Every structure is written in C-alpha cells, then in structure tokens.
Amino acid sequence: MKTSKHLIETCTTFFKHYDALEDCFDRYTFERSSNKNAVIKFTKALDNWVSDTEEYTQALVSQFADSLVLTNPKAIEQMLSSFAGELSRQLQDVLASWKESPAFYCSFTIKNKMSQDLFEIEDMLTGKTYHLYSPGVQRLQEKPESRDATYLALVMSNGECLQAIGMIHFSRLTAEDITFLCQVIGEEMFDAAGLTGVLTSHPMGLHYFDFQASTKEIKRNGHTFAIWYASFKNISYTFDQDCWIHDNRGKVASYTLESASDAMRAVSSDVSLWENLSYAGMRVFKLDGEWIVMAQHREAFDVLVRLLCLKEPEKVTRVALSLALHLERTEARLPWAPFTLIPRREMKPVQDENDSSEAWNAFFGKFVEAYNNGKPFDYKKEALQLRIDHEMAKDFIEQFEKKRDFPSYEVSEEDAQYRIEGWPVPPPAKRDQFLDGVIDSNLFLLQDTWESDDAFNELSGNRWKDEIDELGLFGFMEDAFIEAFEADDGYTVCTVFLWILLHMSEQKILVRSIALETFLLFPYLQASYDLDAFVKILGELVYNLFCRTSLCNITQRVKREERERGLYTVQASSFLRSIITPIS
Image 1 (cartoon, one colour):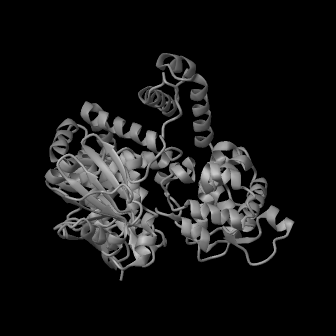
Image 2 (spheres, rainbow, N blue to C red):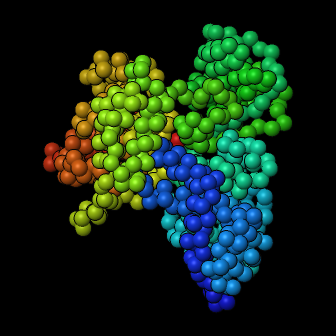
Image 3 (cartoon, one colour):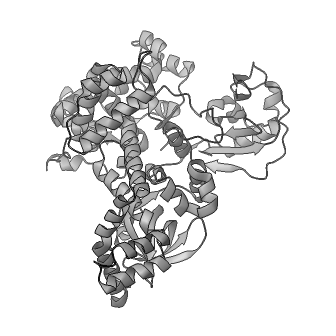
C-alpha cells in the first residue's frame, strides 16, 4: 500500500519548516547560558565515555540541543518573540502551532506497517498508539540487527501524524529496562515529567539506550540471564561464612552465596542450580533502611527468597544484565550501591600517590576541548600545573590522536567475499569498551574457575601452566595477544576476536573474516599493520592458542599457508562457551 500523496506533502513541508528554523534553534540555544551549559556538559560527558565516534557524538548533541527548545512551549514562545522580526508569517505560524503541540521523546515498538514509511507505533511506557511517518524507521527495518527492535526518537506532530527529529535510536530494552534506566539517572524527573523530562535533564540516557543496540540474551540450562531483585524491610537470617562471602562496610554489607550446605539443597532439588552457583549470582545486600535480594535468573531468585524464609515480594524487578553493568561502568548509582555486580579494576590511568582522578579528568577535559576546537595544547604545562605524570599524559594524547584521525578502512574487491553477515556489530557508542580488554570491558560474563584452568592445562599439555596459575586463563590470553600485537592493540583484537567467535558460535568462521571485521571496526589499526600482515599474526596466534588446545574446533589439518592467510575456519568449542559468554 502506498502512502497518500497528501500525507507525503504534509510531512515534506514539516521537514522544510524544520530546516528553515534550525539556525534559529542553534542561536537560541547558545544565547541562553542554561541551555548552552547543558549542551557543553553533555558534550564533555560523551568525550569522556565515548571516543572515536565524532559523527555519533555530534548527532546526539544536536538532538539534545533541539529537544531543549522543541519540548518546551515556553522556550518556543521565547524563540518566536526573539526572531519575529526575521521570520516569515508562515514560519511564525509554524512555531505557534509547535508551541501548542511540543515535541516529546517516545520509546516505542512497531504494531503495524501501514504503508511505505508509515507505521502504527505503541509507546512502551504509556501504551498510547500513534501514526509515525519515518523513512529512517523504514531503513532500520531493512537491516536484521535493527529490525523489530525497541526504538527511541524525539517526535513531533505535523497535525496528521508524528515525525521523528534527528537520530532514531534502537535497542533490545524492555519497558521495565527503560523504567529502571530512567529511575537510576533521574528518578524525581521521571516521576514528574516522564521520559521526556529525564532525557532533557539527563541526556546520557540516549547513550545508554544506544549501548544496548546489539544486546543478545544469555541463556544457559534453560534460564535467561538478567538481574532479578526485590526490596525487603528486614531479613532475619544468619549468613554462615562457610557458605557466604561477606563484604562488611560499616552499616552496610553484601553477602554472596558461594557454596551450598545440605540444608540449602533441601530448598530446591535442582542439582544444576547448586552445581553452578556462579551462574545463579545469588546475593543479598544490607543497605541503609532496606535489604535487597538479587539473583541472575528467576529460578535462582525464587529459591533465594525461600532460603531466606521471606514472603513472595509484591514487586520483583527484572533488568538486562548488560544495561546494569554499563550503568555501573559509567559510575551511575544503582539501587545496591555502594556494592557492584562484578568487582572491577579502576578505569582511570594508573597514578602515583600525588595524582588524583580529579586532576586526570581536568587534563582530559582541557585536551579534548582544545582538540575539538583546533587549538594548540601544551600538555607539559598542563601536566605540571595539575601535578600528573607528563609522560603518561603524552602517551594518552598520542593514543587519542592515533585512533581519532584515521579514515574508515576500504575493503578490496578480493576481500569483500570475506565479510561476515549476521553478527551483532557494536554501535559507535559501545566500541570504546573493546579497548579495555576481555576482563575489564564488561562485555563478557567470565565463568573460569580453578577447575577450568586445570582442565585447560591438561588439554594443552601444561604448556602454559605457570602463566595461567599466575594470571588465570583470560589474563594469560590477553597477554598472548599483547605480545603478538602492539600492547593496546592486543586488548582490542582479543576482545573483538572473542566477541565475533562467541556470537557466531553455531557457525564456522574464517580467521581472515574476523581480521577484516576488526579492521572495519577499528580503522586506526592501519597505522601499524596492513591487512595481510595483521591476518598473518592473528592466524598464527589463533591456531597455536585456540586450535591446538580445547578452545576452538577445526575440521581438518591447517597448512602453513592457510594459517598465514587466515584461510581456515574456527568455531568456539563447548569448553570455551562454558567459561565465557557475551553479555551485550
């Protein structure tokens, strides 16, 4: 069915009016200190957490700046008054109509495709339905990674339907996830003004939404992994230190179930639950004025409630594991703070006792501001003033510029056949985490144990036993990649390799294909390697570390030439999949 000519003309006119007024939006925003400061603050926050993605950052900031005006009738009225002398009567009438029907943020799913570019959508938080005209949403339906997803857009009515302004975000978040996100970053504003109030006050919510674009549910033994938790006023239970790990911090405490007693096993006959307690993630938090009971799948949560002799709670909250981990990584305060889901190493640079995190943050902020404005930056002078190590500061700048200044990688006709289809390509908002390595990235659920390390040592003939005893399997794996590639590159390549390998675990994948996708994700690698040299290093490393051990399956003997050109296939073994799972 075709969209009516009249509706297309109405929508086209709306965009023409928006384009004609866009300069006024920008001028209004930067002539008012509150709006200007909000935009600058958001830009700095993105620079701190999201790098190598200038186009993405600009799109987010532009949408946020527009929303400060278009969602606020008072701001539209002020803009109309300020620019009345330079606007045509038609554009003045447009602003007057927008004042009566301002824009709003809408998280939605598609109920029905009505015609080309025209959709019936349902607001996930209010249940209201609308008609939305959006060529952008149409394009998202044509890609498997963004088809039938959860969407978020700044929308406005043209009198006949809604139209999206700026970026259209997509993810796999549920309504409960979005509510949790809003309550974490702006609970009071969410209660008072809903999603629009939160995102115009706390625009990092847009980034959190984008971060979930490639999220895939983790399932094991019939359980879907997520964070299940509920609040209780009081718990009367003795946490035996033979079974529970205690973390006491004054008036607050955390208890993590590590081993099950016979009495505990009597609560549930599910043997797999008690044999895989690390997957269950059963924890109890004693906080100021409340207790929180948590587990990583619903059966484990229900068992934990019975174990603690508690009544079934009225409200149980389910949150995507990857969302909770990312919120923690960006230092948001979650309901169970000051405790975290997974112990993390510091994300700031290593500092001596004279270097504070505040000093490094100030240095990063000044450098990024100078970089974005094309101004010179005296890093030695700034480092001296802030009392931080100038060599570390220099290294930071070199790495930053190295990664920012490279154009996208151009795939040759010969290599085009090696592209991988169907894997969750991480959006720009998420790619920074791949620079942190497997252990610190929060992209994987690591379930290696002493027993799994021993099993790997046995299967690899104890070739790397000393290293694994010291570093653990994944620490050793990262070191192997760091030794093969340049140090920081090793973290990135290792993380991307495992990400693709595990997400495509049902298929056999050419090593050359993984190398090619890595170059496309991180084109700055061209500075140190051409593709063939990169493939040769990766091909030899994967063959020795993964294929000659228990980590990857191969179907036949691999010749040296095939190793050097990456023209052999690998598939994650059941052993590897049992100790690491991608969580987002």
